[in-house]
Structures are given as structure tokens and as C-alpha cells.
Amino acid sequence: MLSPKLDHEVCYVGGGCPPIETEKGWIIIYHSVHDTPSGYVYCACAALFDLENPGKEIS
Image 1 (cartoon, rainbow, N blue to C red):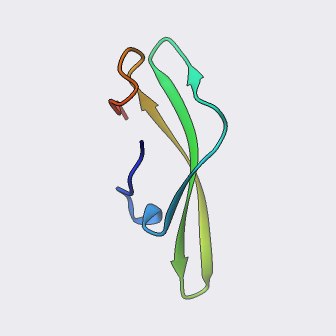
Image 2: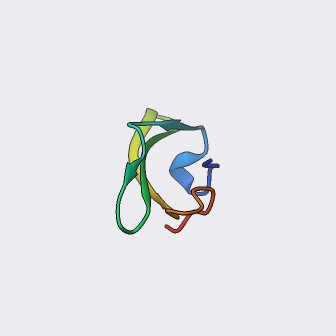
């Protein structure tokens, strides 16, 4: 569902917990990794998907 868009997502994007249903849509918690000269940097991220059409990313 997610493809790399941001600088910190260039090496890897991985799943987190199951999607969370809210009034505004589905919240997806995920993590990303990018390689730096000092080593890997891991980031926790969130994305919001449309409640009726989960293939549509809102933010």
C-alpha cells in the first residue's frame, strides 16, 4: 500500500500494528529505514487512508 515518498523511506518501509479504524479513516502505523554514513536510521510513521476506499491515501 505504501511506497517510498520521503527521504527517510528510501531504503525500507515496513508494517507496524494492524490498521486502526477512526471516524476520519484508517490509520496505519509503519516504520521506515534509511542508511547513513553513521548507520541505519529508523523512523516511526503514520498514514491515514480513506475509510470507504482504503487504497486512497489521505495524508
